[in-house]
Image (cartoon, rainbow, N blue to C red; front, side, top):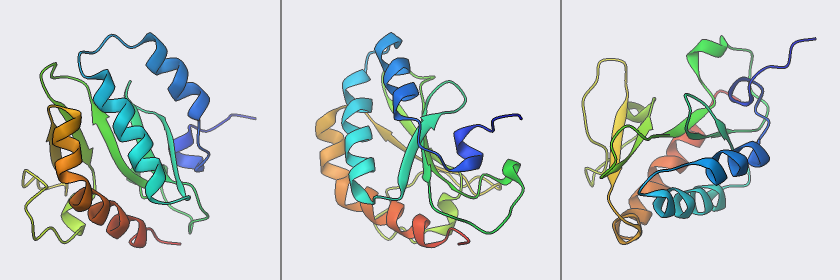
Length: 142
């Protein structure tokens, strides 16, 4: 029996994320750790895993059947490409109302980004970030 990755099964893999973080050499690791704690505290149905070699956050509850490649339970993931800013990618960010302009980009596939340079930067955007995440949780096809 093949075990599916957490993003398709909805099973949080905090242990794997902890192992990944322990080995990670990234200048803004403190920002990632702060965001992990914050995002996971928003709702008990949010889980975490490693996808595309970075932490991701997703809905862990029961959903209607869907194609795993559509990432319907996906909420947001880290992008560790840049070293001076942590980018968070919302694959379905275009589906959320964003009156404050927190989300950047206008990608045809619906992605939107948020960039953080420090923990203080995250703290200044926490309210808007929580609002976006809560909206995306409500949009999961349960």
